[in-house]
Length: 333
Image (cartoon, rainbow, N blue to C red):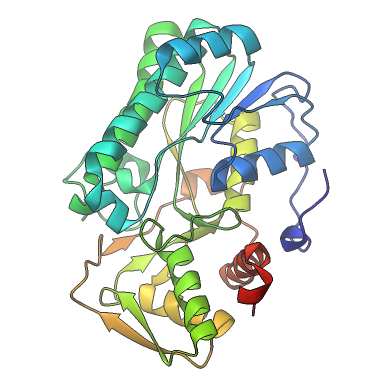
């Protein structure tokens, strides 16, 4: 598989221990999304010969009958479950029922079919928003369910918590080798740049890009700029997923992150400097900040030998390059 231009400078290791077969069929759900497409790239680069995918038109993951039929026909040996309905603060606040229903159903059907057909190993990807809003920092895995959730995305978080608890339940009852990982905030190619539903990184890239095209002197950023967030390039996550599929079989969920964070103000300045250095940033404190801080403790993953490789500035620059490559010629800068 040819390396895309925006990844040409990113090098990932070949791990010496190979615990899962590179010839057996492996199903990547959500393969057209940011995470799923990164997984397909990483698995292809690692020599996997039989990567199974299905579009939403081909398979509605909310439909148990359809999912059962697909698993019976395709018989995947492994599954990386990356599909889900996702979005930023605005999308979560305006569509909580959609986020709850879709994500509950999507994990329930896939895990049920994977168990029923004897899948050898499944990796379920959660989200760092499952942790309590005000838990100690950095966030250790055992802090799960130790306090109230962030209200702006509690519906999504509840669904993702149900997914990882389902992995534990199938393991206890049926002995399934279902593992779960909790990624931090992600960014990269194939992200959602729609300002009505995107997360903070693609939203800022889009805002500064549009302002540059329009020659606008100022760019408005939601909130005070004070909350702190951790960010991981999606291709680092894909590499961590392969690492975990090869080398991790424990019931306990495991955090995946960079182990370092920065203020949203600093993030906005970094993206401004990459996209539109002349812009002035104006913070709109009437809009919600969300969780004050969200930094994952990645001690357990580091102890097993995995660390991120793409630093934030180079990753953001590559993400902006990818975004520009997707634009019509008239809107490129």
